[in-house]
Length: 187
Image (cartoon, rainbow, N blue to C red):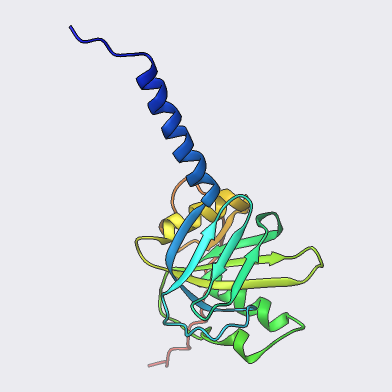
């Protein structure tokens, strides 16, 4: 009869623990992210997928294909948003910002339904910033969960798009804007 040494399971547990600690410290890495616009001056085109988002409890880092990098302290994130709400919130924030560059508006005029994720923050000096990102269909839920976990901020989403946000993530639901009906001609 074969006996199992008590040190083998203990050794395996130590290895698994070490791997999980290293993985946790590296954070969640998403290598296919589009930068659709925001307060970060970057020359990356809005159809470029080769940007990287890394989310950990210590830092949110967005590395652009053009070499630019934006680091955000998760404690300074003031809002997360998803869908068309994300697009509207970032556009409004940029329009109201004191420092406005043409690059900040680059790529913000899309009306197609895509997996937009907005991140808004205010740094230690009081300067506000925001980015509008687009995640791939298979990744956006993970991006939302990682950002929510790191920041603790609820995700603002329209009632219509709430079904796309993973359950268990705290959300703030906005009412859908109703378009005024055109007067119908009388017969």
